[in-house]
Length: 216
Image 1 (cartoon, rainbow, N blue to C red):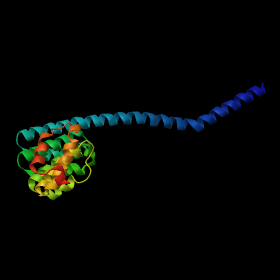
Image 2: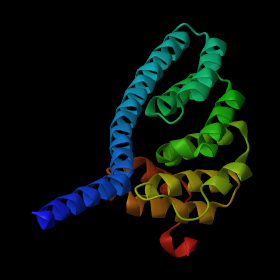
Image 3: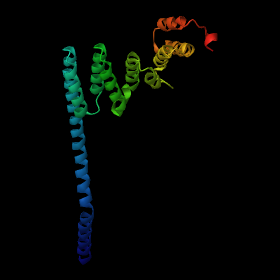
């Protein structure tokens, strides 16, 4: 009987020791687990709220543009960028506003918006399209060298034709006809696989009066 009581006492002491050693860690683990769940839900709610806020900003900007209030649209766009962070609506708003400036003949503010978008790593997926639009704005302003620098080198995947065509247009304006023809031919070679219309490129190539042998 004494042995049995000793065993029970020893087992009880072992249980108390185990509780002393491991319960705090278990409690902390539970706290962290529940904290992670609630933190993830908070993050989801926050992201959802940011998307809603961004869509509201975009709608205001769109309405300002339609009302020809480009200054108001620009102000809302800057507030939007500061408020909602990384969001596809920010890119859409920037493209929409810059296009409105171009249509209004205000090339400098359009170029500024496109440059800001290229400096924003959160909008990296839009960089190829934004680059091409900025190139055309710079071309219209006569900033040919700056525009050429943007399309010099390898094009982003899926944009080889547009990249080469823009480079050809700029080279032609610089009087570098042979190089322009080669660039347009490169664009023509890549155009079918990217679903573009080849007729305009063929007309540009023909307008140089050069053959493939002449250009080479």
